Every structure is written in structure tokens, then in C-alpha cells.
Length: 496
Image (spheres, helix red, strand yellow):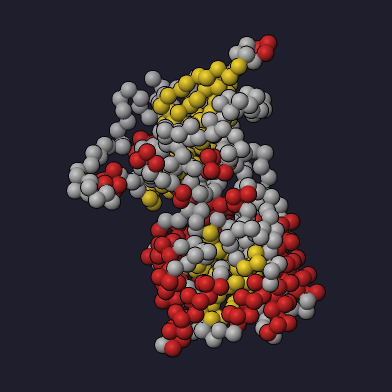
């Protein structure tokens, strides 16, 4: 660990960390961070035309609230920016049946990173020819599902995977089917400026064929020589939460160079170039992500120039935004349960400094990113506004874990209390999809809101669901408390 999970006070560091001066308006909703429909009515946060207290009463907390127009609008922004290219939604960010149907209806492609993600997309009716299957360890069962379904591409990640796929593809061809279209994932040796755990294109990692060692060229040549496989093109992905295009441009330069090497070695002209995803979003007001139009313009310029230099035709481009589509449009609602003031030190001439530990009814089981990646989030008091002076706070979950932190340091009104609702912004990507049952907490529901209507697209997990997987408890009745009736001592969103 780079720091103690409970924070600087417990790690012997100088407390408290700097969070800057309190903002003038503690309840402000920065449009770059919050969903496009987010606004306040009489002090209360509204999303998709619905007040959050109504949503919390109807569906309980924690609760993921997904702004449908925001999600689909961002998908459309990428589709427009990359007209003539293919926009693949990276479904690992967040996938459910309804999301798959939105994307299918809106003409996007979809990336699956496992056989089960692929199965979800297919079950929702997503067109198989617009699906690509990723993964560094695809099993024979997963590859067979992809071959049988006739998906658009299998993204090859290792020589072992080629060995697994060839006989399956050969059986399809022998039965009169077409060769299986594939992309070769290339590790281009560029480390994105991001957290090392999610930077995926440097050499010392598990993904792809190395360009530097020649493995990428060897893999491409081998695939071309396999009659049951069709090498459609090359794939590259350099990381996640990237705020500039320099890394993408450098990757494009190197991958187009590999296309030139393939052409020299085999005479084949590859028709597709997938430059992956990783486009950043604003989790905090100071974040400055690149607009889809800027990304598209710069990538097209670089690819065209590199192809001209090598006398190659410009391939069809593809990109894989996931977080950039799903992330900003979802908010997580929590109810405050306890508030614990913790003295941090003398505070100099201003007297003792205090941080309020604000505990909510979820935590790292529905958002692991703060603990796992040192991710930063912001949140606001959602059920009302307040003129109370600011207080230094840390929003924490209810797990038996000192690292169970949702928002490490922020300013909230000093009068927040049990029963209030907090809304954490930009939780649409890698929160529900990485959720767990740690401490046997249950996975929250996801409710889509649009034009004042709320539709549950993922239902709340119940204890009966969990009991059903337990060999001893499968036939034991599980308690099922009603979630639409808040506890009388702390009505949802009301002040006691």
C-alpha cells in the first residue's frame, strides 16, 4: 500500500490531506461531472425528471440511478464523431439487458470480455455480427460460443488462443461456414498516464502480442496462413481514464507501422484498425476530458498520415468507449446512517481540526474503485440544500474494513445527519459491474430515469438469491424486509 487504507491520520502522515478551500456553494452540480438532467428543485436533486427522495422511497438505497438520455446521448456523440468508423461499447463498464437493447437500437457495436458478457448481449437480442470478444484467457467453451453465434470478431490475445480457435473455426468451415474473423491485439509499448493497475499497453503485462519482440508480426502472419481464420485487422488498447490524445496518436503510429510490416511479409492489406478505448471522464470539476470530436479528428489525421507514408489504404477505424458512455450519467444514492467526528490534531491557531466520518448504507461492495485505484469522487447532499457552514468529511461505507472509503475528503454542510441522502456522481462505470457481496451486503438495483419515468433495469439482489447458492441454506427461508418502507426512526431523505 502507498498509504494506510484508513487515511493519513492512521498512517502517521501529516493530517489532514489538502482538499482546498470549501466551494462557495456546497450543493452545486458541475455540469461536467453530473448527469445532463441533474438539477435541483426547491433544493432537492432531480434526475431524469424525478426527485431522488421518491426514487429512494420506491427502490431503497443504495441505488444506482441511470439517466437514459445521458447514456444514449453520449453514445450518439461518439457515433457522430466517428461517422464511417465503428463505435464498440466496452460492456465491462456496465452491462444489462436493457443497456444492450439501447445500444443495439442505436446502431453501436459491443465488446464482451467474457463468455458470460457475450451470453448476456446475445440473450438481449444484440446482433452477433456487431460483437467482438476480448479476453486474455478465453476458454474453449467461450470460443465455441463465439464461433457458433457468428460474432463480428474474436480479438486474439495469445498463441495458445490461436491453437484453441483454429480447430473450432476449422469445424465451422468444414460444415460450410465462413472463416472466423479475428483481430490481433498488439501491445505497442506505450504506458498511458494513469494508475499503473489500469495501464495496459506497456510490455510487462498480460495483454496482447508484443510489437517490440516481434510476436505481434509472428501472430499476424500465422493467422493469415490459417485458412479457417480471417485476419480482419489489428487491435490496440493503451489504458483507461486518459485525458489527452498523445498516447492514442503514438499507438496509431506504431500499429499502422505493423500493418506495413504485415503487408511486406505477406502481401495482405489489412482493412480494420481498432484503437481501443480508455477515454477519460470528469469525476471532479477540475478534470478535463477530451471531447469525442477532438479524439476522432486527431486519430483520423494520424492514421491517414501514417498510411500515406507507407502507401497503404486507410483502414476502417474502430474505438471502444465504455466509461465515457456509461460513467457520467449514473449517480449512486445512499442514506446516511452515522456521523462520527474525529479529531485530527491541534490545527494550529484555529483550534482542533476535525473530520466527520459520514457512514452510508453501501460502500466498497458497490464501489470498489476508491479502495482499489485511489479513485476520486464527489458527492452532494441530495434531499435538500443547506446554509450551514462547511465541514471536512470522509464518506465511508458500512463494511468491516478500514479501507471502505467512497469519497476520501470533501466538504459537506455541517448539519448533515442520519436520514439525509447523499448522491455520489459519475458511478456508471465499473461500480455495479465490480460489485460484490462482501459482508453479505446485497447488490443494489439500477433504475433508469427518463422524462419523469423510472424503470428498474436491474432488480435489487435479495438474501434469498444469496441463500440459493449456499449448499446448506438453499432450502432455508430468507428474511425479505420491504425496501419501500423506510425505518420509522429515520425516514428516507427526511431530517429527524
